Image (cartoon, rainbow, N blue to C red; front, side, top):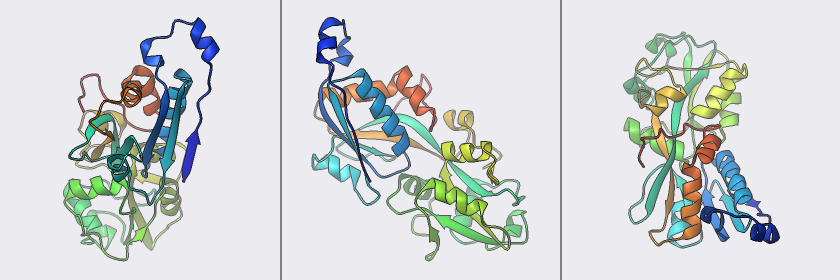
Length: 274
């Protein structure tokens, strides 16, 4: 998918108004990604262009792209990812909680972080092994190049251990629909971003989120680190100075930017550091 977000040129008005230096930026900026952050980045880009009429942002979102490589080869100026990269500047703009979702009829009370690792490694075949119903476990995995999967595997130490043949679903919306529509004897389980998961629960979709290590997956517990499965949302860019990149980064960290981010992800606390 390739989304272009165009700026509006209001040069005449800018000449008449006392615009802060941060709003004087101009030029073209390509931002690349392939994870679940697309909706958030589109909102940030639109708001940034509205505040900076001479800036043009091109949001390139492709499931098969390699955003980090695009920055290295100067095809893009910013890559949205969850892992820092040697040789590139890294700025954290948010946290993403990684939730474990099951059908609402699955009465498994909670799991530990170790049990999540064993569950997605294929050790548990029946939910009864985790105190749940006497039904089979149906694992749902995410694409190999998605930020959520990289962080999930790394944090649990299960890289390469998710069973071959596990059903893979890319979009969070389809994951949620699959879990909601999968009834016993097969009980589905998947991992996905906190924002989408909480939105599904609040809207009445028949799904629930499992507490991990006795901590509920919620915005406050992700923000303060009590919930153990979370990943940073990072903007990676070249170490070479670029006023437009720096202006966008500052906007993402501003109160307005963090408010936009909070609609989908967990914003940073005032004392958080990248």
